[in-house]
Image 1 (cartoon, rainbow, N blue to C red):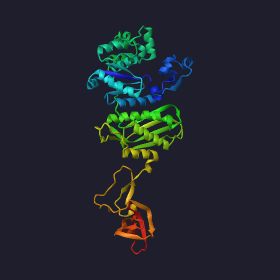
Image 2 (image 1 turned 45 degrees about the vertical axis):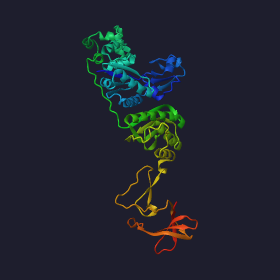
Image 3 (image 1 turned 45 degrees about the horizontal axis):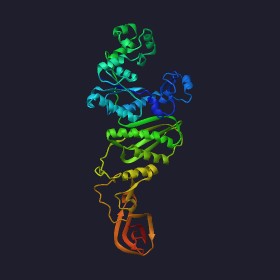
Length: 468
């Protein structure tokens, strides 16, 4: 079987701090040695495995961040989720890479080169440094990826390539490698010259097992990744961010990943949740809605900016997370795709989403007709884009109703010309709010059309509203 290994030598560094203008390094605090470096630090003489004192002497301006394997694990799982559309057999290798079962995918992508090009295009969008290696076993693919060997799908060429690799690139313990070095064995070729039975007799079982799995003589079972049904991304920041302006580039990166996630599945979401984690205390959760669903990052970005304008940061942020749970099928595009001169217009859905982001969801409502003949209860507030609930067996309300109702009926003492009426409304006995009124359409001295009423056995007229 053919395997592809994706090796990320700077995974945490490029996830946590993508800016390469300053010398940066990741430190393993267990032995205080550098395990990841950017190009700026390398250009100043800093190397992998170097101690902190030596690195500081060579590069006084280097910035150091602690190694966090939990961050690498989350990022590896995110990459596996993004690659699932390109390769079905994926096995995470935390904290530095991924295995891809390539045999079936090569046929699906019409060739090994096309398959590798699809993988590279995905990686370019992630802005991550990655070395690809192919092999006939998972361990040989990982070894050749770390060695930076040329890609090939020919078993003989792959076997010759990994035989030339240094033992320093293998996963063998340092004590085993030093033992082999004292015996004059420094490459895989020298190690493979020894029969597997001799290795089992002269060394511990771990070395023989490694060689057997590398060459394919022993099986190497791997757990395969199963993608979740929801989207979630978490990022720990390299330093505290105190302003919305400095936070937005990080939000924009997460929204770009959300867009790629949704477009690959031809889905949209109505709501996303942005969580901002302070150094101390509980995180701030911001829910951002998009009426009937959206997938484009630029649209979510504008809504997020409006939401953060309404709810500015009240504490410095050290991490953030973006999640979307309710995934919906993408609605059909009703735009005119044949008109080259057509311009994008702000739809009613987008307008509602912008207003809700700026003012708050509870402040943007619409009026809907309710099956009640009492004017004060004939309309109710609803979600701006929800459908009005109707009862099929109930009669529709009368159509002769004014477009403007007063908040409460007002006594009317001006002369009126009755044009239509009376219309008796006698209702409300079921909810202990009975109402018996005779309504008229009238015109006042100024020519306005009014909706007025009087109650039986009561004196005086009352103004309910005005017609447009």
